[in-house]
Length: 288
Image (cartoon, rainbow, N blue to C red; front, side, top):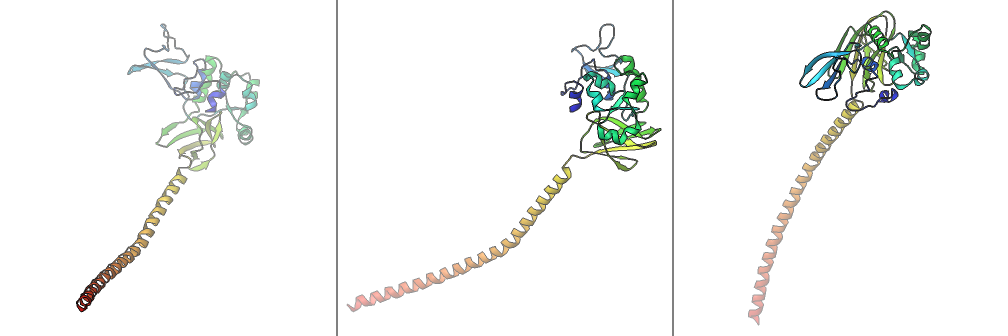
């Protein structure tokens, strides 16, 4: 995923970005952190956790569980936006910090949705600070969490969220963007925007909106259609072969019967001729 590379973090199976980028956990709606007992401790003897904002929650099955006090629920909205030119001039970790303040849009998205937001440049003029300190992260997370979905439900290949907005805006979900996703807002299909270098957002209007995302594997429908077509053609082939084979078998049986009948007649004929020849030779010898 390009996002981790963009913010200067390694992407692996565990997906554990460096602890210094603690703003990232809030951005990605990480509520709990699990640390295996016996490994590198997540807190020191005084109880101070490696990342600020996390506190011990529980222990289960050999794991210590820590809760993120700066958790932001799915389906939140921004007041500001920033463009790639601005964001690419920041350091990797600072890019993640700024994403707690402003949504990152490309040029086409700014043209389409820019009127819904203030610019990051306006934020800076207003004296705003990026979420580079714990206080700033906590303040930004609290503000964004107030806009998170009223309800969020996850299905087998889908998820839904209900949001309430006082103006038209984009609703952000820290769920990786993929072409297999489709979305509706209040039952109407909407475009899914790839924002923040790899995540999803959809436009909503003022008031309450019911958002539904559904995932369908790209090419699955075509693959099923091709498979069914192949099966159908195979059945037609078998049926045609069966229809053509029966007359051929009947014809073959008739030929065999005819040949067998001819063979019997030939054998009888030869037997008769043999007797006649034997009788002829016998008479010829007696005449001599």
